[in-house]
Structure formats: structure tokens, C-alpha cells
Image 1 (tube, rainbow, N blue to C red):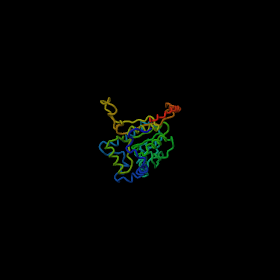
Image 2: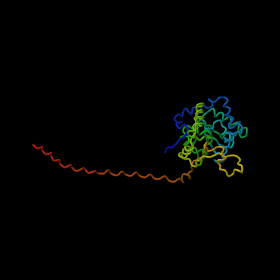
Image 3: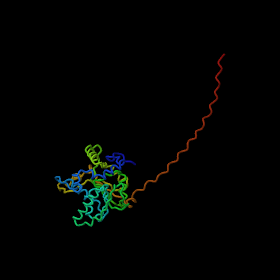
Image 4: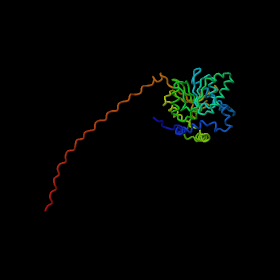
Length: 309
């Protein structure tokens, strides 16, 4: 059954798979020199209030806390980029498989993560990292080998979302967690969103194609994930005087605008609890064609009387 409604900003992205993949490979080469500094600085934000720093860090830390991973769990980080998320995962002694299509980006991340771990005196943790220069659609990770998959600001870059979600489900162990962070929720008709994404694609060629909230959940559930749910990001000090207000009043990131999603690969117990699919009923046999009796022969027609003489 197909989804009935808007899906993602560029619903035909998979038709240009090669072009979008090549643009991701060449991303650093297309950056202006002054923009490359951000590869090493992120998530730092020098603006008053350091807004993006806190939003990025809070998303990652809250997401990790929600997944409740065991020590030394194995994580596949999809679209690992320049490594700022990777260095935090590595610092927590997780084993990390980094999937990134740009070889130049991987080299930046290797240097960054190695220096970070050495600074904290845990350089041996670099042995827990592997790097694969690939898209999620083409990566080679053994089935049921990872405890969690994280997409941080990268799910909207997947070109073939069906292949990506199927691969994600396959590599997770039963009960493994999927975490999608930092992806805008496409609101069809929002000109400000669409203009920004079109400008980004024109500048760099990389795919900018966020999903509608309803389609993203449908996609995950249809592929076999369970407990798929979107979240608000709430992190901070709440005055006692406002303690009766709803959660949404304190959201730094509101689910209306951002897809912060957790989901889980079902276990054998989950599958056993599913109601059995109804047995297919045999198609009823078509009734025999009614036998139509031949009409009785028409009575003979008397010859017309001869005209009088």
C-alpha cells in the first residue's frame, strides 16, 4: 500500500541517485575556503547565547540517554561528516561504524577524533572506530550486528529512503534502536523552507529533501520498525512557578518543525505478540452460466391475401 499524501520535498530524488551521490562525495571540494573552518569548529557557535551549540549537544545527549545503550554498544553513525558527533560517541567508549560518502570528510574526521581522544588521554579508544566511504544505500555492514543507528542532520540526505530504511532495519540487532535527529519537518507550501533548500542544492548539488512527519512515521512502521515516535526537545531549567504548564511550552525544538524520532527493531517476543494475519479466504467459485433455453420457433406467417382483381 502506498502512502496517501505528501512524502518528501524531492520525492523523485532516487531517479538521480548517481548525481546526488557524486555531489556528496565532492562536498568539501565545493566549499569556499572560509567555510571549511566550520568542519572543525562544529558544534561551536560564537553568536550571543550559543544557540546552535546547545541545540546540537542537547539533541545528541538526550537522544543517547533515551536509547539507554549498554556500555561498549556498537553504533552505526550514518552521514558522520567531519566527526563532531563521532568524537563524543568515541569518548563514551562506544564502538562506532562511521558511514560517510566523502573521503575528504572522513580524513577530516579521523584527524579531529584522534586529536580529541588524545587530548583527553584516551587515544586507545580510536581502535573502536571504523570508517566506510559509502552511502547508507550501498554500505557493507553485517546483518543484525549493531545496537543502534544514528542519523544526525543526515536523514534528509538519503537518496532512496526505502533502501536506506530497509538497510537500517537489517543491520540492527533485534531490539536495536534507531535515532533520527536534527531533520526539519517539511511543511508543504512553506516557501521559506523550500527556498532555502533549493538555494542549498543549487550551491552544492547535495540533496536537501526533508520528510513530512506523517510520511516519515509511515515509512518506518511499514518497513517493520515498532515504537516509532516523534519528540519535542525539552532540556533546561524550569521555574517552579511554571511547573503546571504543558511540556510543549518548554520545547527548544518543537516537533511541528523538527523530526526527532526514536524507533526500535522488533524482537522475537514483539513478533510473537502480533495478531496473526487473517487467513486468505478462497475466492468463491463463479456460479455457472445460466442455461438460456432457445426461444420457441416463430409461428408460420400466413401469406398475404392476394389483392382483389
